Image: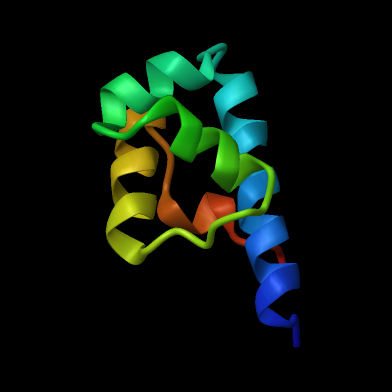
Length: 73
């Protein structure tokens, strides 16, 4: 089982991976999801652990499933 900090890092990596795959800047993702660009950066750099609602908004903005951000078990 992952620790909370390890899980936060894996989710942050997942967000960044899908953002890049979709060729979307942090600024554009923030705009689409109704977030601040700095917040998106903090998520991708493992500084914050997003709520379920934030993950939902980001997933919708990137047109992926929320589970795509989670590490495979």
